[in-house]
Image (cartoon, rainbow, N blue to C red; front, side, top):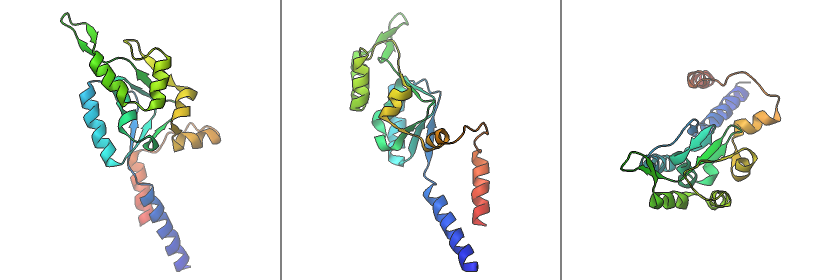
Length: 173
């Protein structure tokens, strides 16, 4: 019996360690300066973390698609990507399209995203939204979202990080 209990504890420990890869969740990110996102995502790429897009990822946020390997990005049913041309403030304080930065931004995207953007007229000052089935056809569903779609929907909130750590600690003791 002690052997079986020890074996079960070892399996649980290994499972917890295997599932301990860090995950970064993107939601409600309206973007910002391109350079800031390039730096942020370069660090994220090197970390090996998985990215969950679970809400709005617009403007410079979409650089994540070119910076992070495709197999480390997943999308939930709430994911929405927003694309537009890069811009700077003009002399009168109004937004002026920056053609060079727009071209650089476009070049960062994977080919399937580029095709989608091109089919809709390219990057312009007007926002293009990629979501739903079209987005889910390009990126894998996030595990929790995929699992939820196969089971009856649950309205229970997800456990908080401190609850997960507490549960992990209980497994180890």
